Image (cartoon, rainbow, N blue to C red):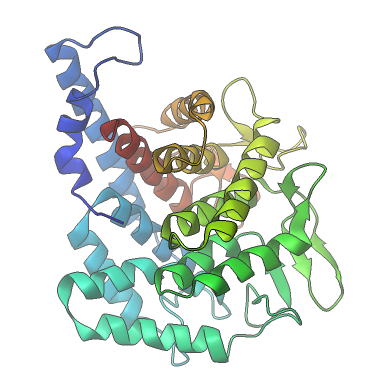
Length: 355
């Protein structure tokens, strides 16, 4: 994927738009105000993210957000720390969760990119060590689907974002697709077009059957990233994955509130309202339209969700009302909420600038 200095080209990107969201051509003065407002919001959200304490997967998703924004020096510095905290068995960015497995792959693409950018061989050695762990040591279910944690035989929807994009970016395309479909097999509810959250491989039952919003968002975003990485020869697999993302989008959009947000348990209106699923779905839609595999008609929904997310950014740049850390059982703030705001913005401006 081509990288660029997102913040540096943002003024040109916005200025290139012929029609503003209000339906009329923007004056030069309004363009400048729009540029300043967007740059200010993005920079505040980024700063807030960088000041947060981060566990393994949070380091990875923050790095991916900065990579997609084109903040190259930030990515390289964070990649250095992810490698510094690599476990003996190969798992990256091991801080805050000793049993992280798929979460330890979330930093993979950014670490690999850092190695290519800097030509520092320590990054490639770290990637090779992580891949060797995944291929030869990582515990997995009978069908080969890798556990989300090392110490419990469970599959989580979150893992679709953490592991398959790493496998795809190192060229293990078939295995990336196998992992996606293995997770889907046990978590997908075809009637609801939603994923449950957790499956226990040994007990052969759900550890958490709820259709967690952010879990569906992790899946949509993870599969979106894999679609972008697949080689042209994998036509059948690409078709499968595109249909999967469309189904998740349709299943979630059926429950979108009038304000562009969702309940934490997507199909349970008694659960609290949260922000991050909207960002994750908007990201997936913008990337899909830009890639030519999601219809333009979905953009209206993405724009509504993006506007809802912008309304949740406070004066300090914190995206409020996301499923909140550290327990993710209440509306609050979280690194992943910051990261997906930034990824949503990168995807939005890549789409608008590429028209």
